[in-house]
Image (cartoon, rainbow, N blue to C red):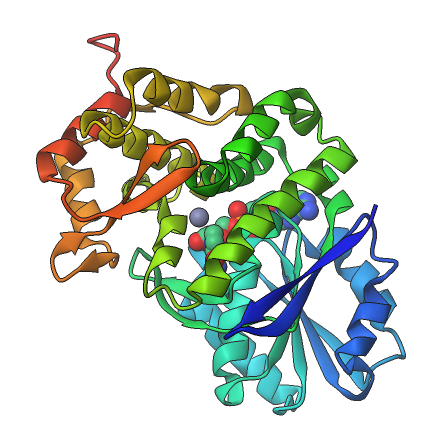
Length: 368
Ligand SMILES: NC(=O)c1ccc[n+]([C@@H]2O[C@H](COP(=O)([O-])OP(=O)(O)OC[C@H]3O[C@@H](n4cnc5c(N)ncnc54)[C@H](O)[C@@H]3O)[C@@H](O)[C@H]2O)c1
Ligand SMILES: [Zn+2]
C-alpha cells in the first residue's frame, strides 16, 4: 500500500505526507522539492545512522549538488542548544546557503532539532522529515513544531517551521525497540481520545495486529493518527486555541518526564498524564467511573504504564505549575467529556492534581 495526504497551512496546501513501505519512491518525492540543484545535509542520530543513513545517501548519490550527513548523539538528553550549535558550525563549514536543504532522518528528537536548525540557520532554510519512530510518524513530524529542551524544561526554546515534505517508510519500525514502539503508541491513543471514538474502538479491535507490528495495520493506524493531527493543526497552526487539545496527557506528563530525569520515555509519561487527565475528568463529573477505568486500563495491553513508584506528589505538582503551558497563572488542562471529545479547562485545582497524582502513585507499603 502507498498513500499520501496534503496538509494545509493558512488555508493553502503546504506539504504532503507520503506513506510507503520502503525508500523506493523517495527520489521521486525529493525531485519535486527541487533537490537536484541543492546541497543536502541528512541529519540523524547515532542509533539511526548505522541503520538507514546509507539508504538515504544512496538515494541522493550523484543526483544533488552535494550530499553530506551530520549525526547527533542519540537521546532526549542531547536535545539541546549545544548540539544545535555544533550543527550550525558544520553547515557553515560545508558552505550551506539559503537555497540548501536539511533532511531529518530519525525520531522526534532528530525531527525537532533539525526543524529548529532549519528555522534559524540563515533565518530559515527548507527541511524535510523522514521520521523513523512510531512517535515521529504518528505525531511529531507533522504540524511544524520544532525546538529543544533548555535547563531541564521540555521544548522551552523553539519555532514553528513547516517541513516541505514528510516521507514515511513504515517498514523502518521493524528495527525500533518494543519499548520505543509502545511509547509512540501513547500518542496514537491520545489522538483517538481527543477526537475520534471510532478510531479508539478500531485500536482496541486491532490490538493483536498492532502489537505484532502488522504492516497494513500500522499504515492504517499511522494514517488515521496523522489525519487527526492534520485536522487540528490546520485549524490552529500556532496553538492559539484548539491545537492545545494535542497536549492531552502532556501537562502532568511533561512534569513526570522531568521529575524522572527523562528515565521514562516521552510516551510513557504521556500515558500516565492521560490517566491523570481522565481521573480529573471523572472527579469533575465529565466522565463516568466506568469510562475512567476503561481509559486507564486500555494502556495496559499496549505495554504502557498506568502507575509509577513512589512519586513525590508535591514536587510533581510544583513542576507541573512551572511548566510553560500556563496562561497568566492558570494551567490550561486538557480534560475529556467522553472518549473522542477533549476540551480545554482552566479550573483544575492543586488538590485535584494531587489527587490524580496519588491515583497513579504506586506505593508498595500501602499496596495500592
Ligand atoms: N514536534 C512535535 O510536535 C512533537 C510531538 C510529540 C513529541 N515530540 C518530541 O519528540 C521526542 C520524542 O521522540 P521519539 O520518541 O521519536 O524519540 P527519539 O527521537 O529519541 O527516538 C527514540 C529512540 O529510537 C531510536 N530510533 C529511531 N528510529 C529508529 C529505528 N527505526 N530503529 C531503531 N531505533 C530507532 C533513536 O535513536 C532513539 O534512541 C521528544 O523530544 C518530544 O518532545 C515533538
Ligand atoms: Zn507528545
